[in-house]
Image 1 (spheres, helix red, strand yellow):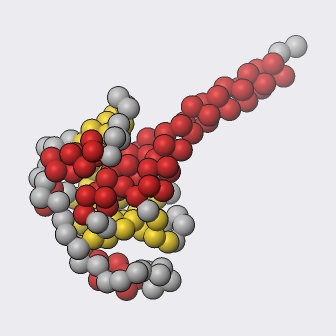
Image 2 (tube, one colour):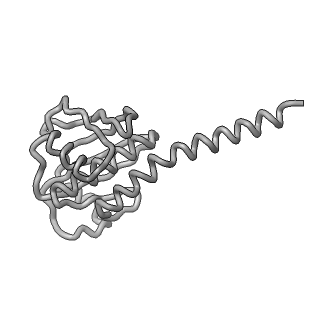
Image 3 (tube, helix red, strand yellow):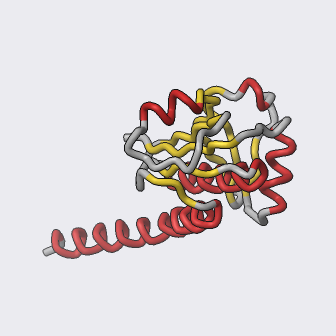
Length: 157
């Protein structure tokens, strides 16, 4: 299962370097690979979130087509550009994608379409989601550890 979100805007950033500046300005612990020029982004984008390497997919999309396909979403107006963010089960990839989307939206005066909620969300909400996802992995590991411990205790004579 993959998740996705989009940033819709009327302008694009000139480079991944400019995007990284927006990330830094927002105070987010994310470092993006600058190996691929921004205009050529298509597919996996390696990043590091809080010293942890991960990646999410990032693609340029046609904003008009996207809005037409998602007629159930209340877009506040027509947008010129759309940037897609996709990831799988890696919570750090999801946290990274939300953080990157938030910074991109802030830098371009854009909006974020959260496909999970099927609505537009603020960059501030995307940052909250990013932080919640990053923190959830520790909780998941602890829950798994407890289940394994419980199972091991029950299987011993």
